[in-house]
Length: 120
Length: 416
Image 1 (cartoon, each protein chain N blue to C red):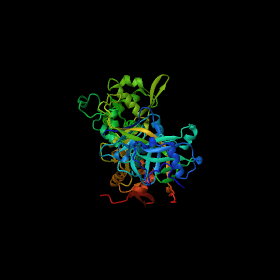
Image 2 (image 1 turned 90 degrees about the vertical axis):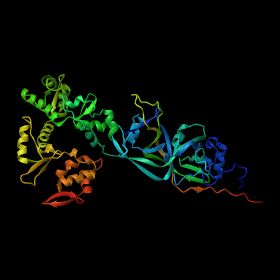
Image 3 (image 1 turned 135 degrees about the vertical axis):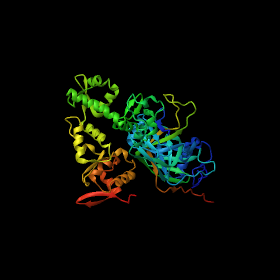
Image 4 (image 1 turned 30 degrees about the horizontal axis):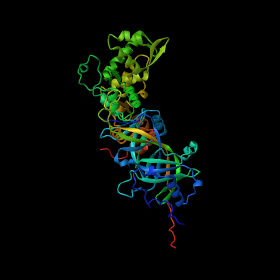
């Protein structure tokens, strides 16, 4: 058995945020999601998150997580990777970030209705 | 209202504009335009906006390149302090996660919602504290998932530890086995690789097993050899008329050194006593319960069962003078049958029983059909997790009834 080690990568742990949305996000075009815009995230002065995605507005809330998450990123080493004892390191998961807060959008999205210009 | 003089709104329905790195190019003007279309009042919003886009490498967790792990606050703190977590498990074992002192089962939890992981995203509190004049934050989403790993604290899987060490018990330095360099031996690292438990749990269990690190390898002592060492010590205590609570280490090593390696004598004292220092000298306080228990095991292992009364007599005579034997010392080691005539006692070691809950109960019920709580408790105590009690285990795995005014437990199903 080769144990998977999960350790913090050198340079410390970043803190990310989780955003939870209902349903799925689909890419409009077949090129997939990578590189594409999602939308604008605003906060009201009271701290309510407001997300504008396409033609929808979503209102959410910030939740401080009772149980934080760790984001583990798989790292498959190159041939030269060894630990302090000179043992070859196998595949491991590096804890890349911790997540302590999430933005939850639970309410139904409100469609943005754009007015059609009147014909004169 | 005419909208044609404003920049065109995002495409309807989905969040996808096929411009690479589009999130990076979105301007404040475009953001404000969108706010206007959305009929949101900028005055009610904090000045900063996060323009969210999917990073160039963004993908789903299904690809296996990353995953989300739910932590307890203490584990989170350990990670922040720089400690590692380890996932352990053979192909035929269920994977567990180990911190330096605890073991957890890993389970996937699915959610019907989409979880996006966003580096560099600030919460309103953070934004308010920052007081920067930046009002547009281009943010790349790292990836997304609709599941995560859940942790549930579990019992470390330690049965394998004894099994590995029993492949090659230590019988003393002169044994033929020690000359054979191919024999099965395990270092601490080897054990950490093979046992699904945290390092601290493994170290504790090694102590419970009276294991000894010899030449860099962990060895369990062959029982007869362990008794031989113990007998040397107790006989010396007797001939020197020492008190059991004040056995001097140096004299032991001096007197017994010619018979056995000094490290083994000291190991024996550590297993069967507690070390302390008095006026610069090292002494051991011998543990009468442990010594009586080991003596009982030595007597019981020679036959299937013994007449209880006879056993108690021989046992008391066999322990060092001054120590008092009691059946309480034998919990989890021996079983008394008070219904047979004559009453009998036999060896039954809890560590010889299966590790899995259901299998443990099956094996206990096949040994004896009905158990009182008092009799069965020592044989299921180790199954109690963080929140489970003996009572809860009995309720789950057995059925109770009354027999002669006493509550007894039997199997829920017929044992073949």
